[in-house]
Length: 430
Image (cartoon, rainbow, N blue to C red; front, side, top):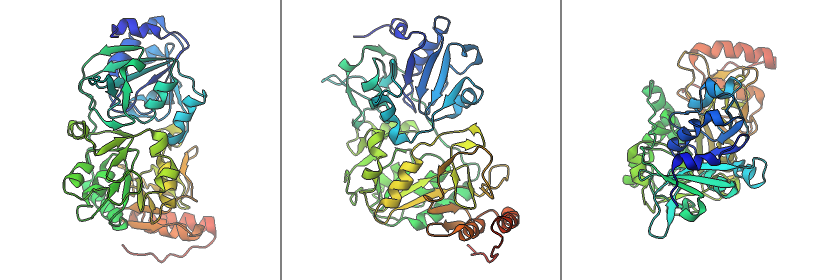
C-alpha cells in the first residue's frame, strides 16, 4: 500500500541502524526525507556500500543525528568517514550479506529503490542487486521508493511488492557515472598491455573507470569473450553489439552476462532494461571464489592506489585516509588465480596526476593491504607487464621497477639495494 514519504520515514527511530541501497540505485528521495527529520533523530547509524549522487546526511550539522558505518567509501562520504562522523568496515564484498544474515549488523530499516511492479506484482532492484537483496530479507522494516526510471533487470533482482512495508512512488533520474580520462594515451597503453594477456574465450571481470574502458576498447579483435563480474559499465555495450562478447565458453551461466550491480550512463540503463542477456545476482554468489573459478580463463582486472616492490597492493586507503574499500578485488583475484587459465591483473598508471610514483619502496604508514604479495600475479602499467607469481623478493622488485616511471626507477633501485643488500640493475625494455 502506498504511503506518504513523511509518514513512512517516521518508522525510523533514534538509535536505529538504517540500510541505504547503494550505487546508482540510491533512493535519494527517501534519504532526503529522512534527513528532513534530523531534529527528531539522534544516533541513527547508516550503512551502505558506495552511494552515487548527493549524500544529504553528509553535513557536519547532522553529526548528532546520523553516523555512517560505511561498507565501501565513495567520494560523496569520504569527508564524513575520515573526520569522525563515520567509519569504515573492512570486509570482502562477497561476505557483506553474511553481516546481515548472521545478525552481526542487524538492520532495523532498509531504504531501497525499485522499478514499478509488473502485472504479477514483482518489482526489480534494477541496477543494484549486490548486498541489497540480503538487506531486504534481514531488515525489520523495508521502505521502497518506486521509480519508473529504474530499469527492470532479471535474475535475483525480482522482489514482490508485498515484501515492502511501505512504498512511495517518486520518479527521478538515476545518477549517471562517466569517467573522464585526463591521460587517454596512458590508459590506451595500459589497455593494450592488458589485452595482450587476454585470450579468446576468456571470462572478464573489471570495474568502472578509464583503464577498464581502455581495456575493453582494446578487445575488438578478440573472440568468444564472456562476462562474470561484480559490476560493469558502458564499455561492454560495443563488444556485445559487435559479437565479441558472446558468453559461449562460460561454464556457469553460459550465454549470460552475470553481474551484481552497474554504474554508467542512461544508455547503459536502457541497454539492460528487460534484457534477458543480463543476469543480476547477489554479491555473495557473483563474488564467491568457488563460483568464479568454474569459468575458464577468468581475467580479473582491478586497480590500486599504490604497490610496493614486493607486490603488496594497497587499494582502499591513502595511508590512514580511507579512500574506497576492500570491495571485490580479493574475491576475483583469488577466483581468477584458481580458474583454469585465469589471470589476476592489477592495472595502474605508473604515477599519480601529480607525478608521484605508484610503485613504491614501501607503502605509506597505515596503508591497507588489500591484495597480499602472495596473491599478486600480474601488475600492469603503461610501461609493461610485471609477472610476480613464483618470484622471490629481489626478482619482484626488479620486475616492478622495470615498469615504474623512468623518473623514479633510480630511487627505487637504490631503496631496493638498501633493503635486499644486493640488486641487479639490468632491465627488461618494453
